[in-house]
Image (cartoon, rainbow, N blue to C red; front, side):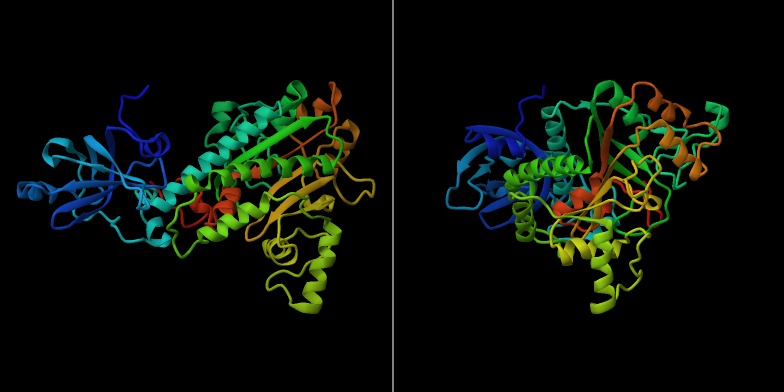
Length: 463
């Protein structure tokens, strides 16, 4: 499919060649007395290629001065030379820079990404160039690997990938944090919005396909300016029929994540960069986390009521939470979630059976009449990354709950309710925020770095 040039990743994977053709961008260049070295990257690997240019003729010195960091170059013929005593097991040697090196794309004298390591705050000011840094480029490769691992897992478990709509007429979560499509009444005949979740449509599709999932964008107009929130983000959502209870959902979620994390750990040398900015966790910490998450054993699980008791004891007897006092009936705040996972359990933890008024209308009620059959997965440093539930499949009970919440006055959800009258089945599922998971596993602490071009309530950088 591609002409016969070699990528950096392919060269490391394939072994010795006699002569190779490579393309890429100059990361750095060093001029010594009798030889020059170019570090070349092409975006396919965390590693670079060492290009050696012996200066056997002083006439080659002048052409080398035209090569600069950031330039895109093509090397038409480079000799593969083993270097077993060095960190890189080989180098590519160019015989004639005039003949074998061509500049494909020049740079200005103000090109900002030089050999030195750059801070993440500085890189964020360059949204069109920041991914050329090894760290943020590696983050996108890491995310790609995670998504591919999810696709493999779902295929192995007989799930069907579907494409739900991004423009909808209903608010799945009932929070009202929607982006309205301008002039939608004239175009669609009624108000339309960017989707906050594909769940309602996945429920309809699961009743036809049994098991289905999607990986698609979601949009929420909440004005939360934190390192955990985005206005546009990607959700992995799954729905399946004949689920029995919440424990089945949590068991599936843990197995799914363990499979993905193990794949990341098995490919750690290719996915985790060696040089990491000070603002992020270091490689040793990241690798230790991945290794620990792969170990056998179930992650802890507590009910919401048990979690509130733990939080209350901490707040009253040890150290108060700075912003929100934990109270039964109120949603867990970010500081509560991070403390539970990071300080108390020191691992991912499932919290189940929240009060019904903390959660969405579609969740199945527990026998106590006060809580619903749901779960959140909390992880250290990030808080909630997965939320799921059993769905109410009884028509009468669903109508009663929607009436209690004064929902569906305009009939936009009539189609959803009618599913309970046409061959309904017990079913459940979950949604997982891709950026939060990637940030947690990669250790970059800010989900704005885990998406190529972020959109958030404030601080948004337009392109």
